[in-house]
Image (cartoon, rainbow, N blue to C red):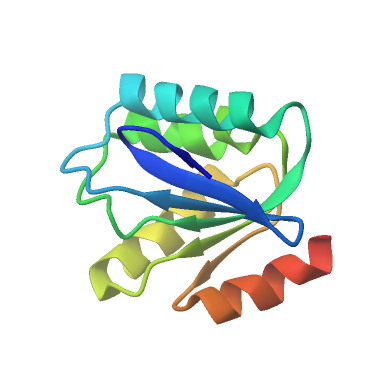
Length: 121
């Protein structure tokens, strides 16, 4: 397991779990740093990723755009776990507008996310 100021992440059964710590406002420089830390941890290996975004309270458009594009590096698929209603609405808009480069799905639970991601192992 790796822990940084912004997230915790680890790999279990071929799936990378990526859990955001509380972030009141995710800006572009922070998003870039987070992706750099993840890529370094992955050692050039591509994984399906369970990304729990419930720690993020708000974010800049530039950060969201970066995560949708460059943030997809070394990912096979991404399941975003967030059961907050307003976040769910915003994430659906985000996926529709930003068109992530890999298969992506919004899930209310880790179980739903794992079901989706298991098809990409």
